[in-house]
Length: 91
Image 1 (cartoon, rainbow, N blue to C red):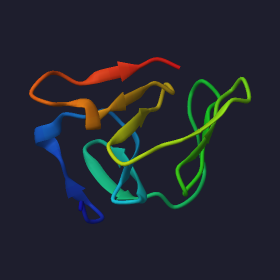
Image 2 (image 1 turned 45 degrees about the vertical axis):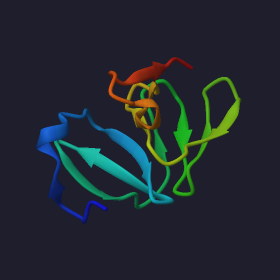
Image 3 (image 1 turned 180 degrees about the vertical axis):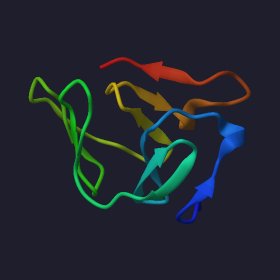
């Protein structure tokens, strides 16, 4: 599990939030840390520290281990990477 301040340069991921081992983490400039409080993405989506998500249109969902939400509100599901590329689920 990434520790606070650990660089994940090899992954080349954008800033956003993700669920890892049941904990919500944030990434900014390749540095990860435990998510300190709720965040609002650029599209109005709200993400809570327990992984619950309220989309700008009011729909709700939960982030699961391996799911990553970019600041624009799009989700990348790392759990579906099986020797292929990442899949992006549009909201």
